[in-house]
Image 1 (cartoon, rainbow, N blue to C red):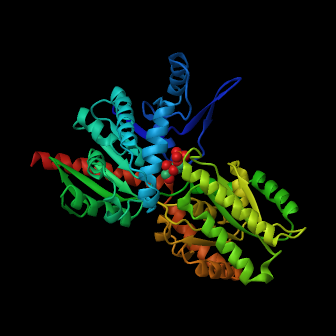
Image 2 (image 1 turned 180 degrees about the horizontal axis):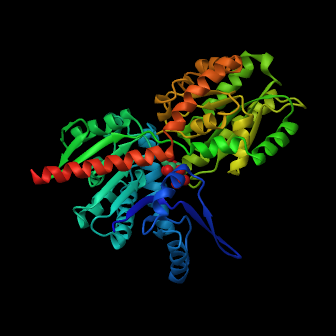
Image 3 (image 1 turned 30 degrees about the vertical axis):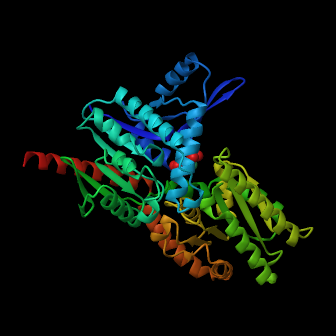
Amino acid sequence: MSKIIIVSNRLPLRVEKKAEGMKFKPSEGGLATGLGSIYKEGDNVWVGWPGAFFSDSTEESNVTLRLKQENMLPVFLTQEEIHNYYEGFSNETLWPTYHYFSQYAVYEPEFWESYKRVNQKFADAVVSIAEKGDIVWVHDYQLLLVPQMIRDKFPDITIGFFQHIPFPSFEVFRLLPWRRELIQGMFGADLIGFHTYDDMRHFLSAVSRVVAKSNSSGIIEVGNRSVLVDSFPMGIDYDKYSGLAISDETGEREKRYRESLGDVRLILSMDRLDYSKGIPQRLAAFEAFLTNYPEYREKISLLLQVVPSRDKVEKYKKLKEEIELLVGRINGKFSRIKWTPIHYFYRSLPINAISAFYGMSDVALVTPMRDGMNLVCKEYIASKAHEGRGVLILSEMAGAAKELSDAILVNPNNQKQMVEALYRALTMPAPEQKKHLDVMNDSIKKYNIHHWVKLFMDRLTFIKEEQKQQATK
Ligand code: F6P
């Protein structure tokens, strides 16, 4: 019996070391939910980093044993590896380059060496449990070299790779000194997936420029293997968010928050701390709105949630300071005794609080400078399915904008346009809000996370069959 092996930098669970012992906290993420139906079955396994450091091999063996019960295999990383491979190459080289912030990218050979070594560690973990006939699905930019490293040991195994962040245009990608090695690492897969057609197009253009391989309709010949490149826009766990919105706990929280906030209309901003999310630009647009439309002062507030992320990376530390300075300045300038313009939360919130924030917000302002997909906007829409009220302002630089053309689309560099979008959103008649929400809901309900997983797996089976037929010709 063949099995499926999922590989990602993080496991869908975080191990926390507490004085009273280890805590195993499951992830709320969409990917964990979508792939839950796969990795929890039979002998299937999820391979990844458990998110903590352990002092000795006894501790590591205990964690390994405990995770085995959850169908997970941990890859243990040292603090130095996390510094060089994760914070360094993944998040100071690849992340800024792939999000068009190439001025932030560092090209540090030591980071690259660590990235190679850690990718080999992940590949070795897969190889240690893989058997001929298994299917391996590798996820994201932290593990670009893993597909080829596995292929070196198992020439016929089925490998899928999905990149969750954008793939930049060739003129940006070419800046990377290791561009050829990265593409060759990905070529180990039989199927390479991106969120959008544009990402796929950029990748194919980089392939033809860097390794001089042509393609016809997304199929690249690599040695005697055909590699398929395709786009798969990721969806959310639709039923979870639409269901949470009408749950008693969310309702109770909404009531409690409402009583404290009084009668103001709410605009929601919810992201991980990241410069790609455009948080300072959004705050500046909110400030400009309050300046240009003074009649809205004391009538609206911004709910600003920033989820801590990568806080050891310098650019993220600076961004946090910048956001806090801006929030302080805007609140200092406009606050009244009975009104706070921005309610700022720098922390993760429980899922029911998130659901309550979605439910209470008249407008969601989702304006990343660049985003592979963005799932917050989809979660907001699903949370509004029953109520039929709410307006989404969405950056055209988010992958989701390709699907959600019923949102008010904006260029996050165009402050005037963002201000006018806020005005339009706050004055949009209820029937128009419902009309747009209904269209978007139909689409995200259908193209949900389970649909995404199935589509990817079907395409993987398809290309493997094609390869077999070619081999018999
Ligand atoms: O969007 C890419 C991604 O890697 C997601 O898979 C993940 O949820 C998020 O960025 C945060 O990543 P991390 O905290 O692992 O750096």
